[in-house]
Length: 290
Image (cartoon, rainbow, N blue to C red; front, side, top):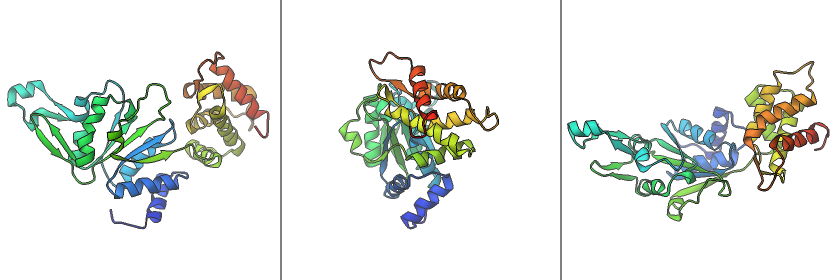
């Protein structure tokens, strides 16, 4: 890609992928990619880590290889494996080896996207070190894979206080540059909800976003909802509008449907999630300034 002014590239990126806000983070991602750096994106669930990563691959016209971190993702799944029947027939040759996503990304100069890197087993994480550091991957009985130009790893992690996540090793973190994605402003989340739902009734959009944002502030919830909650609320509510009005019971029912899977109770809280969400809905729809 021909180098352009970074501000022009940032604006082109936002317009091409219809991204609301995020000027700083997009600028950082483009600068990191231009410099050939691997990127670690940290942020809560639903803040747009995957969206930004896919858009970056598209913007630079690169293949995109995705893996999702969990404790069962082995080194063989990451790198690839020899097929036993083909090995018996042909031996340990390139034709008997099936590339994993890391190997494919390196061979093709693509982007390897690792969703929730800090959920991968430590042994699997460590396989990445030489690829990140030197662009070289050694596969026993096959030889070395040298990364083509453009090979980039973009990894994401949720905050370490989330249940089921581990800490990344210092050696691995040292190979990345870091981008933090926080929740966006109220106005930006309203615009995102409007864009994603193709719905423009402002009072409904604002109430849905206020409800979602209050889940993040509730002392009874360890994790609140991302803007996806507002998108789901509005997507459902717009199908039950009656004379331009939505009843309190509709707001309550739809909010519980949309938000219950997206929030987690704080330790020691015995109230059901439905009650907590209902209380938040009531405070929003019955007050001009919740």
